[in-house]
Image (cartoon, rainbow, N blue to C red; front, side):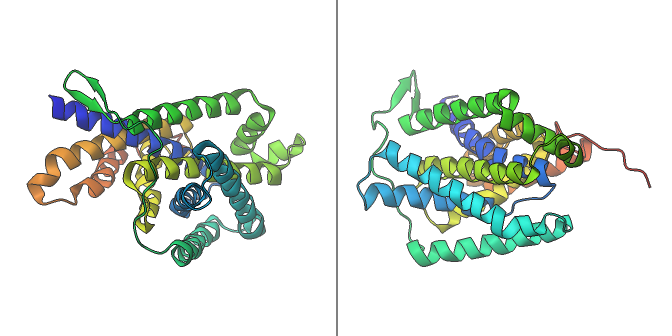
Length: 294
């Protein structure tokens, strides 16, 4: 039972980070109907930038994190303006292919600057484990969960009550109608990419504190894809539920099934789960199916 609870806690924490990164994925899809396949590279850049500020420039963690978020926001704005804005009226497949090329470009830049070796964050969170009976919780897991849930709550309030949040929801529902009401679609797209890049950076920093940082962290972009498909590509609550679901199933598979098959099943389980869910609900758990006239 203790091992089960340990795997459950690990799955919840990692799943919460998946949910946060998936939030940016969903925002871009809702705004432009395109998949951002460079999401994993935004995560990787955020992790490396924060680590560099802490270890080389000796900047305190909170200030380094704030600078990292600003850097990623600028990158997101720059990508939207230089890569995505010229493709605003292009077919969706063109935008998707552009993000694939962007992923390769950003990945190459990361490898050129930071190399391939694994780097670890210095001790930022308390080292003394928290015990609840036989269950042992590492503080970095607890703090990561608290940070992610706080951010998810803040973003929920932002989307529901702020002027920009309402504009983003309007553009997601109907771009032409939003534009006719005086909403700048270009501005909304820019803010959407900036937010997506910011949440990716937070996810990268937290994962870096848990597992260290290397180029393979970018694979989270593929892991988050089943998350958003499971929850529904256009559903923010679905991204949150999908993140926790995938995180828990992945953790359980790593703890119970990987030792039986020699490893590797943990990475495959999210895709297997998505296939079964889509057989029952083709638009995901919370996605909205549309009616198309032909």
